[in-house]
Image (tube, rainbow, N blue to C red; front, side):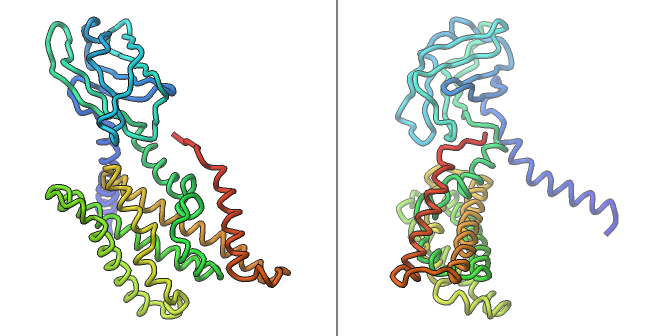
Length: 320
């Protein structure tokens, strides 16, 4: 492969991955350059030109709500305009949940005596940081096993040995990413447009079953030893709570394709981390003098509770 072709491939891949990030930082109105959070309860809007002071300081012209709660408007306490009349700061009465996207409606923007029309824009954190927060949140801060207690059947069944735990973690991650992306595609382009949202659980379970069956067939041919070590637990992945939870979460939060990928990848890697930690300790317990009453699943449940307490220390953490 020559140097020119390599550069072309690198440029194409970079464009594919960076374009969604750049698009995510843009604004929905041509006169609004950017929107961002400031402090715990303020939103800053930067305009392309000076706006009318009387319009800008009228609280009735602005409505703010979380995107997931369109009918609940947050009370605005104060509005301040910069001396150049190009930056507007909206202060609200209550603290904003900055992990959630907010909708900001501005009625009849007036600049230099001209009415530029109303605008509805989204306010969210820096998009690349927002994607990382979804990934780290699903992987560690809100780990589905240790904070939501989902997928415990497969978790306790395949965490006895490290090789089996790692193999199941990788398999689980592949299945959850593939099924989540297929679920997102069907939800956005089939279920939602045709108002078939009530069928989402049935459709998502079917897509997971299809993914697990494909992995089952591939593993049976590629690595029979690992396939046998999984036993019945590979089939149980079909009804695993985490794999069903991820498509439901991304549908409820209206995530786009990149955000859905981050959530699915984070959930899969979080399950892999949980399996690896648990298997490491359970291998050591085989050499420990555990009372007969606590051997097997009882001591495993105690360990799971201790890990859950440890991961509780990450709750409320915000990286961006």
